[in-house]
Amino acid sequence: MSVGHALLGLLADGQRHGYDLKQQYELRFPAAKPLAAAQIYATLERLLRDGLVVAGVTERVGGPDRTLFAVTDFGRAELDRWLAEVELPSEYVANLLAMKVTLALLVADQDVAADFLRRQRVAHLARMREYTGVKTDPSTDVLRVVAADYAINHIDADVRWIETTLQRISRLTKEIHP
Image (cartoon, rainbow, N blue to C red; front, side, top):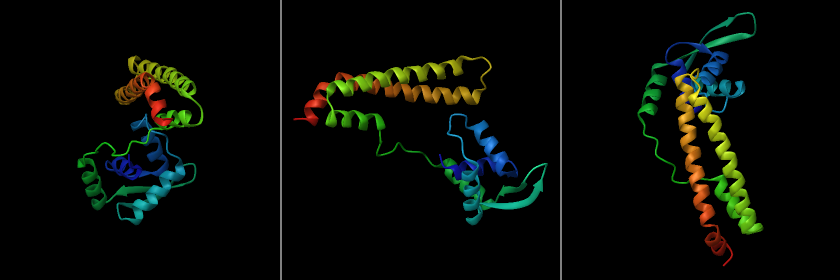
């Protein structure tokens, strides 16, 4: 996800300062990696430079000065354009798990690669159980349920890949070490 577009979306319903944007980002995108304050302010500076937001009044409420930002008409048009754009699956899927298996076969052997895959499967299943717990907790809000569903489906795909790769480990070894 583009951080700039996320901030534009959060600003679309009204002015906010950087700290409020950080809080809203973490509330609205619970499965996303939290943003550092510096990243938010650097992104706001780029959006300001590009004419997508304007800086409004600076207020102080019992702490440091806080500048309010608002989305411009140009920024709203960019947000609308981005929201309408279909996200195609990446042509290149850099998979750290596949890289580690290949490197384990290159520098070690089939047993090391298979052991890694088995341990990785255990870790994936544990994470899947965590997300299932979040999803099935009656107090969980819908945003977190949707994020948990997304994560569970991706982890499930990884687990299926791990199991398939374990079945092919002998053939893969022969291909890497002919």
